[in-house]
Image 1 (tube, rainbow, N blue to C red):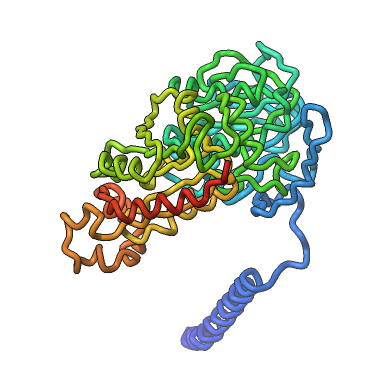
Image 2 (spheres, rainbow, N blue to C red):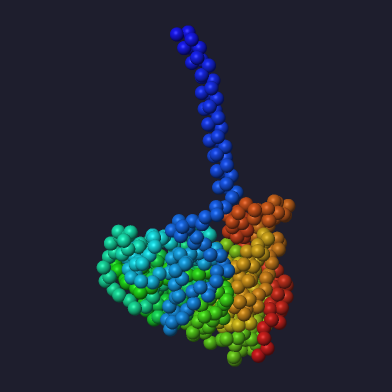
Length: 460
């Protein structure tokens, strides 16, 4: 027994040594596997069904979806996924076949379709806050051997393509109406020549009423409230989501038919019966001076000396109008008022979006609140103005012209270091420099600005 115990005692270290060797080998294998996976690409590509390549950058080759037919049929590329990113802000889904839209349940049944997809048809993908208020739609495959979904029966058949988009998100703010919805919609559907059925999600009645004249220029059919409609609408093909190029802008190299912002403005002129094509130094016919339209605001970023500004402009030989648009403003009448102006002026805000109605070669003066906001005013209105053939000017508000002087001393951190405040994010910028600031313009500085604006206007 003693001999047996001794032999067992000598065997234990060997077993433990073998176990340690095995563990060491396994650890080495794991490390090598990690290194290979992390730093070495496999020489064998994944099978097509395993790949999930859906992102296409902003330089997406538009020739891959050539419009060849009289109503803009798409050359559906079988190598492209059903849903794909067309820019950093927009996603598009396109399908052809047996398509059944059960909008009341946010489902679109499609045969053929490779797999289930989900999408939100609003051109602000990068903004989680906006996208939270956009209804999601599920694309459901049916009819194949591997698909068990049973689609509803069609209750209404259509011979034209469907185009699904949303007025959720930030729609309702005029700037976002045009940037996120209307310009992308025009870019994506103008080539259909009216032969397209709009399906609109997130409808607000007042919003639909406001832009129905524009929709009627793009489609010969009444807009369908896809969220609440009880019908099952069937189509031969469908497009979901409009393509975004840039804020209130269009890249003709990437748009079907090569359309431009000038084409969009011509559409607006037809929609709202705008008479003036070009601004003038002497104003509209039967006037002997240019018209200045001052865009007024009720809440933040108000002009504190609006009446004095109007008087100074009148002394500078401008025909002055003051207007305060809101969500319930009569759009056709207001569009015609803007179109009658040669110069439009306002503090940074959604109201300046009305520059889309200005005649060519008019002048937009954006009043930039104090706080280092030039980068914001550039991307929102300065850059789009060029595409719209509108001369752009800035009036930069000094600390002495800002109501912030009543809230903070001149040596306050917010006043001395605005760009450091910017680093804290949008909420900080908005709270400090937009929501709490009004402006009182220096009248001499204003008059000089208006004189320079006059010089931009073409001779009659």
